[in-house]
Image (cartoon, rainbow, N blue to C red; front, side, top):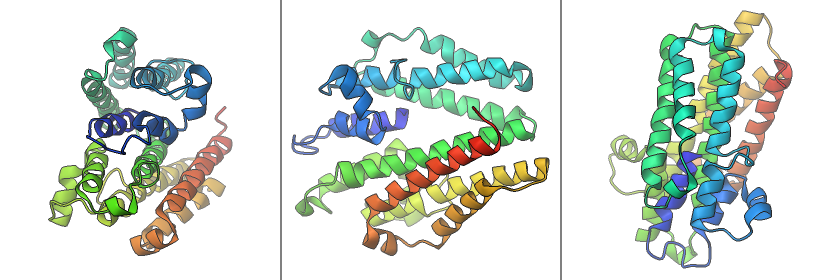
Length: 294
């Protein structure tokens, strides 16, 4: 959610980013699948209200505060299964976030807050990787992490290609390139992209390829599904059986491995991303049913 907000914020600062006929913050709500809930509560989108809704509004179950609150409650319910480092990472984040007020989240202060959220999430992930036993607790946390990562990367790419799609005359322009550059920055991948392709220019096909099909890129869809399959394999070995969710994850991974950007662009990048997001959601639901999550 922090990364989606950063995309909206960065693009809102670009002069004439979308010529005034599309709203960057409304696009952020759409990409986060929160536009209907926001409209029911606030109506017209404004920077201040969107920022508050996506960060602090506990009526919005996808807000950053709601996510951290639920994570903390879940952590408390299984406190003895967590290491001290993992619990303190969650609890400290919640305690500090509880002090944040809407008045402190002006657009000018937003980048610093989003950077703090990313750092707290990385602290939690580092604690999990560095201290948790490799039991089902660990494998379930990995599944949650990479299913969410895959979903978020797909949504971030879709923001640019579909919601913020420029006029045909703008494709390949400086504006188009700058927007793709902002997408890469939002997933901390702009330097990695330049190193990988040995090219300082942001080319739409290469950016999309980097974030979808390159397993070297740790936020790509194919990288995420590689780790989803590893986590499910760990559970299969612990519990001694494989189910439909294992087959679904393997099929999605194989489709990504065999895909090419030429085929994806020919059939439609937006349609590909929408299909992927739907399949990712189905997998999440199947994992929940298989392992009896409420």
